[in-house]
Image 1 (cartoon, one colour):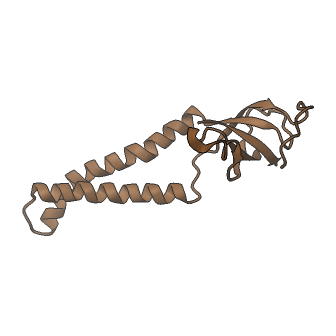
Image 2 (cartoon, rainbow, N blue to C red; image 1 turned 90 degrees about the vertical axis):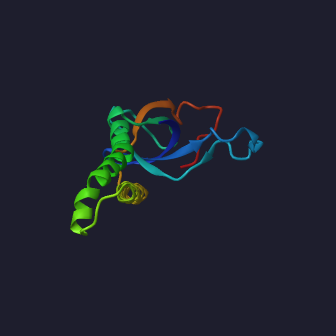
Image 3 (tube, rainbow, N blue to C red; image 1 turned 120 degrees about the horizontal axis):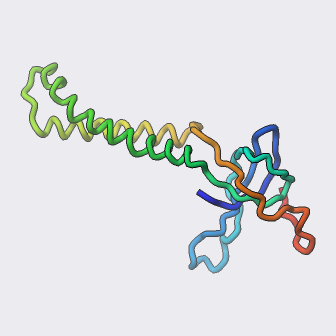
Length: 151
């Protein structure tokens, strides 16, 4: 993820930014280019000098990308695999003979359950890592001819 954003305000280690949405559909007739998105928090690990209105580049660390892949892909696949192998003990508990249908139901059941849990957690307030400010593209102080974006 690499996007442009405008700095709204900043606290100790947290910076509030709003994304500048410029990569929209080609057929928009320039109606939605460079509109602002919903504000979110980012970190400033490089201790860049920032001021309100600066346009910055936001990115995610490789660690965050790896965590996202593990959380959104490997957890459901591992749950589906576990569903296949848990079909035997579940059938014995119910005193039934295990069939391929029961194994398929175990796979689909745990896959749907884990996918639902991942969906609910990621749509909630769970943020494993925050995006980082990579660079300042153009500071509001450097734009003499262009008015700085409102904060």
